[in-house]
Length: 216
Image (cartoon, rainbow, N blue to C red; front, side, top):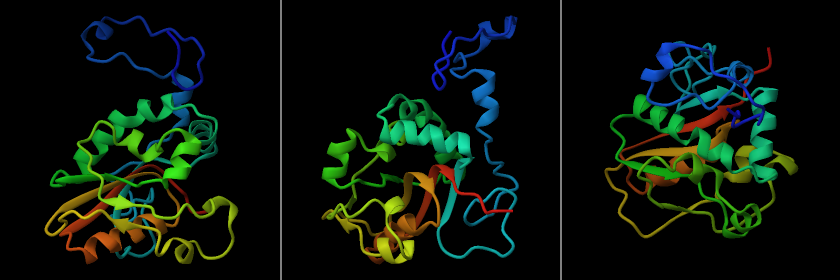
């Protein structure tokens, strides 16, 4: 069969166990080992950094599937900037499992939106793809496209502090789980969290495909 990441052919190991599995693995052993999943039992209870943080984190609680390693960085670049939408569909079931594990009480699932011009340029919203196995709802709008954060300078917190607005929907009392592709400083997710809390959300948390790692 063909690996859904590297596209190389690989053979499943001969085992009777394969006849009793619900789902045949989609990834070769090389790609599986390169992903480096984050251990939820030892990560920071706030930001989800693998191995914990020197001090407890305040604010948004979030968890990620993988560390943002060079392998994952290239994989996401291929997905977002070279149009390989299959990658987003591949990890959607994993995001669903992560969401149900870290926030089973969530009643509203919200992918971080792209501005319509950015979505048109890319052809898809990567966060919406990741959340496609969840019962999502559009609560957030991105009224201005702005410059790509990776190509601008200055404080990331300052650049994203006012980038969202809300649809005219009742938010009071909701338990919201945000979904995005990458957690770097957390500024984008905290901006969305702040807006939702001001609108009356009871709690806001987040899950992402990957998160940046501190330099050792």
